[in-house]
Length: 209
Image 1 (cartoon, rainbow, N blue to C red):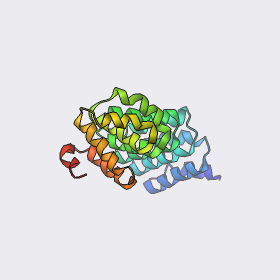
Image 2 (cartoon, rainbow, N blue to C red):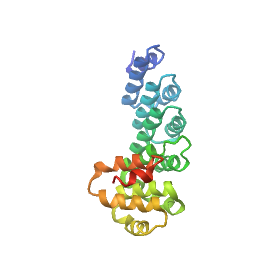
Image 3 (tube, rainbow, N blue to C red):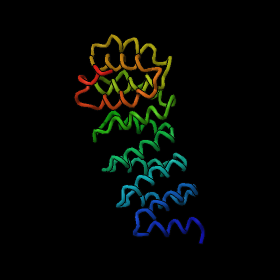
Image 4 (tube, helix red, strand yellow):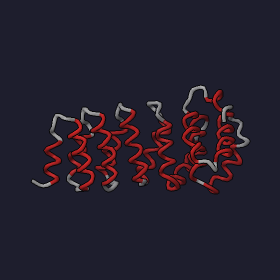
């Protein structure tokens, strides 16, 4: 029996750890035939299997079947699965993957915007053109989040945006611009700032920074 066939057989196992390991191995094999089985494991009853499915999809070309499965996983009810899916999108870095992350940040249907924003930052400079395009159309907390992304990855491309943000009438955007200025040389502070942005009482916590 081939490694591929053995993995497929293990996907039927009642033990979720066995199924998770099979999904992991299918990802490592990189055989496009695995996409059929990963589509099924994306609907597995186990959260750890669905998370592993999202991670394994990073090993396949960013074509229709891969992206459609990832889009399905973005609708998962588990925050952990959602996070794994956003992480895979940040690794893929295709135009569609970046667009999906931006859409998640904009829509924020589940209140998990900070996860999408964090993964836009992880993707790095490749996201800058798309974020620069949508930034002028945003306001409030969303504008603040995208400003955070640009502050982390855009460098000089965001210079004028920062100048404008430091005089923005929106207190939230102004605070974020100030916070980024104070932490641009300390990347360890960025996750904390993102977490504060997601807090309802952001105004209270802003004074800490």
